[in-house]
Structures are given as structure tokens and as C-alpha cells.
Image 1 (tube, rainbow, N blue to C red):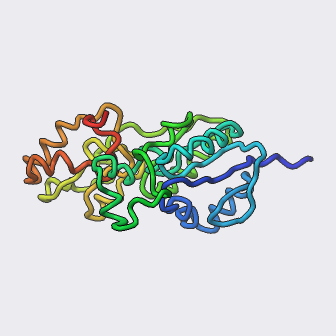
Image 2 (tube, rainbow, N blue to C red; image 1 turned 120 degrees about the horizontal axis):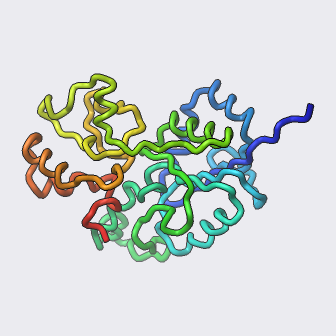
Length: 253
């Protein structure tokens, strides 16, 4: 009996901290070795020096699209990949990088006298989908390793993975987690995309919407509850969602 052909998988990074790639090491030896029975990793800068120009079954792209100079590389990856998956918040939505889209002096603030160095030139931090077609996204900052395994497993079996489109509040209810608002705290789970099993509220930490928003989020309701239930000022309530969802807000055109 001939061996079953493994799926060729590659990981690429753009504007990011590469933390989502590192998160793969948290899968545990058994899970990771189990995956390697079904996939062949042909490029992964965090773990190997080899690179490939051959055809790829699944390309995982980490990091936001922040430089026009990166467009050609993204298009080349897309052209030779059967599937492209935006890997983590930066690739899926622009992530924390998109905070810079709301200011004009970030380079001077961060780099001081070196702010005008040419390699720092960039445009707004955008999701990878602003440059190329993306088939699926593994959300979160860092990405959720269980969702990564779920998506890869479904794709290897020819199934279409279902990405959650309901709020984190649903998962808190399922876990019987006491609402942060009932405890006098704040939380963005009312419009944040679920799929992480709501570990943060369960550990006493407000949801920061690192997985982005659900489709058509009611941002006005979030602002209202932050003001009325958490005691935020109106300005703070409006700006609270910028950390991970700066590109998803209705005031971003």
C-alpha cells in the first residue's frame, strides 16, 4: 500500500511579532507530532532554514499588510498556494498594528531621531485580505491553537471549517462564567467574535476582542453599556475597542 501524500504547509510572516508561530509550540508534543503525520512543513522561519518555491497546499500568513513593497510577495504566495489562511489577529484584521492608523506621528513617538529612516516607511496596517484573497482566518492574539488544529483537521478531511460569528457572551453563558459587568467590571464580549471558549472572563480578565468583532456589530450598544454599566466616559468608551479592532470600527473608512 502506497503512503498517503501529506499536505504541503508553509508559514510566512509580515508585520508582526511572530507570536502566532511560536504559539504552535504550545500545541504539545503529542498534538504537534500527530499533525506531522498528515502535513509536511516546507517553510517555517521560526523552526527551519529551508525555503521553497514549489506549490503549497496551505499557506499560513502571519502579520498585517503594512508596506506596499510586500504586495508582490503576498501575490506570489497566493499564486502558488491552494489555500491561504490569515494566521492571527494582525493578518486577519490588522490587529494591534492598526493602532497607528489613528495617528500621524507614531514614527517620531516610537523611533525619535531615527523616525525618517527609509526602511520605516509604511502605509496603514491592513489585513492580508487587503492585498490578496484569503480563504480562512485563525483569529486571536495570539491565535487560538485549538482553532488552528480544528481548521487544519477539517481542511485535511475536505471539510469547510465554520468560523464562529456569535459573541463571546455566548461562550461565557455556556461556561457559566459570571458576567464582568455584574462584578462592576467592563468587557467587550457583547460584540467580540467567539471561538476561544472565553478563557479571559473565566479567569477574571475582561474580553478585549482580540478575535475581532462579529459581523455587523452593534458598536453603539457596546459604548452604551461601557458608559452605563462600567462607568467609562463617553470618549473612553468609544475608543476602548481600538486595541485589536481599529480596522473594524464603523468610524474607519
